[in-house]
Length: 141
Image 1 (cartoon, rainbow, N blue to C red):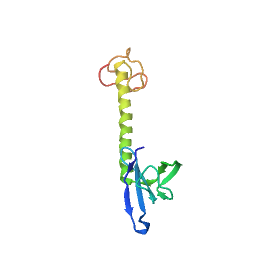
Image 2: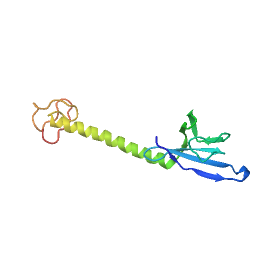
Image 3: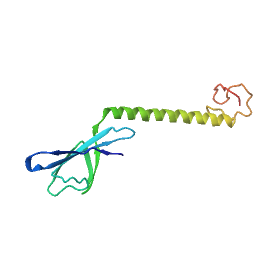
Image 4: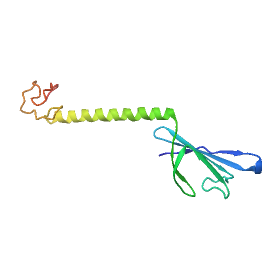
């Protein structure tokens, strides 16, 4: 999981408190989910909030929290990223499944086997169909 931080510091007048907004985006190859967190009265240190600071967050289920970091599962969607990731992974799946089938067929043909069922064709006359599955054999053996 990769994450990106976009800190935004907002200074407002009561007690000149500082708010730190961190937006985290997740996903590969494109970002497809995000969450946010606001620390009030936080020093400009990302590692540890100052004493007495308040923290608000949204868009993520917190799985485990430590003093320095929250481990969370974001649930706010980035729809364009979800669509692009789905298309990318589906295309990769189709290419791998088609490529595997073509590789097996080529390897079987080189070994003198039927490309469809892997039946031994070395004793079968050239140009005749496979006696096991009946598939028409194309190309030379």
